[in-house]
Length: 169
Image (cartoon, rainbow, N blue to C red; front, side):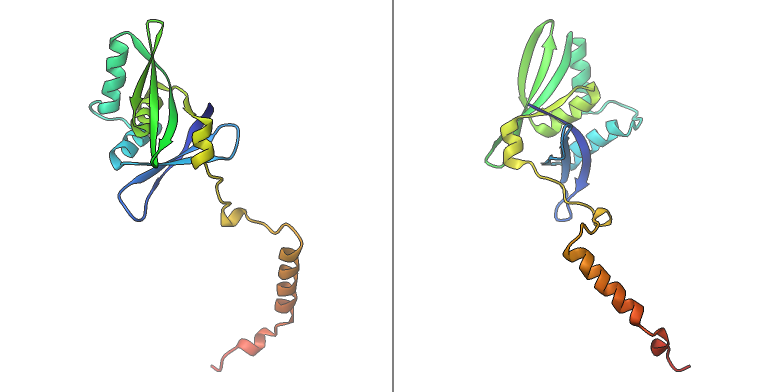
């Protein structure tokens, strides 16, 4: 199992869906999972410590589990089947560990409320994990052709006579 944290929640430009990006705590790999806008909002509300007047569904579920003597232990995104992620919710109920099938989005929303670890099965991360692309601002020439191109451009700029670009006034 690979422990992950929520790196970000992103908005799809093509649909109303959101993507939760889970990042490996020990590396750079990320797991993108499409989720609905309601689940994204439920996760965001908790992550940003937004005060709400009444409990949302995931608050209710956590409260019911606790009132029945249970405690959320952790969640595991355990399978990718037919391009659909599956998850398991683990609840410690008086020393017995219950394992319950659930959607990853719901399990993540519950995990952030219960402040418990989120895990991804290694095979799932191998199948669907990605390495983030560097930001343009972070990309720097590493040498070789990149530096030579920049040097050639600098030489070109240094030879320019800017008076040639002045217009007639």
